[in-house]
Length: 382
Image (cartoon, rainbow, N blue to C red; front, side):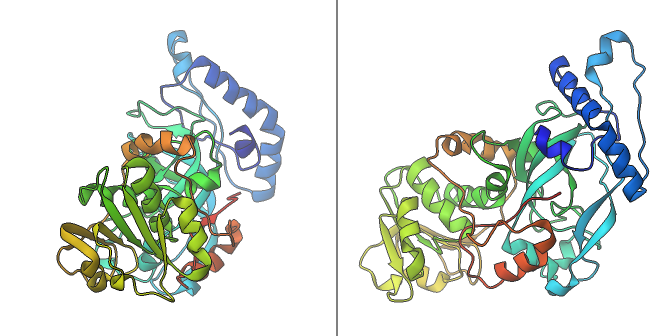
């Protein structure tokens, strides 16, 4: 955490609220003192205004508030109109978002891209989108640098991760994770698993929440079988692992191209199907659940058992298939953290990444080819 903060523009410009332990505050003040010279130099170079807030509260409250620096403005990727990758621009003077009482401000260390990011940019759900211009990005991992007055479980300096938009398609935040700072409700976040890097953690939130919620809605449980269509993708790779290692599946089958079959097996697939050579709907097996991440709902219903379910993320829905839109929930991440910390469930990051912050447009172009393995991650974010 200290390395992340000391290598970037410095926090914090507004008063921080409890809970903070004296030891935590001491560490933060030490960081501030070591970095003051660097901060002065940074102000001179960028000519940005900083403001210092001071606390004059009674001695009994001295340990509950803290004062540091962070800029009024930040570097962020934005778009002011809907369209292709060409509408994306890096802006050096985007206002750092103000937090609400139930939010924390995060210094972003890493972010990840999802199909919903480019569909939003293309205007696929503009009727329910937040106003333009937009800083895109749903997935985030980083460090808490400011805490709202109603936040109870997170502290200054906590390393966290999460999907910042509670409803993916209904009023997603105008200020997303593809900037240096983002404001997020406490309930959408969890502490970062200790064994994961920021880039690994950023690869998880929206995808693992989608995988988990779909399995829950399908009433998947121990002893049941599942077929995952698109098993090497961001969601599919996590459906395989959750079904096998969290829900206790009796059999996991999954589809991918030839070069990704071994990955499927390493994640826990008992049967890896090469869709370039075999039609999954022709195999003799039937499954309790088919989880379709690629839009093959009409074929998926042919291999589901009577009384089973087909989870559909994209494309046409054919009964008994159903579609849902994920709800971000930090409690799901907290529930799954032990499986991540034990190594039973692992993030899958595309080998072309992580993409640096100045290559976000290239990362989007790559994601939109549909050939990514696992998640496309952005790191570092300076």
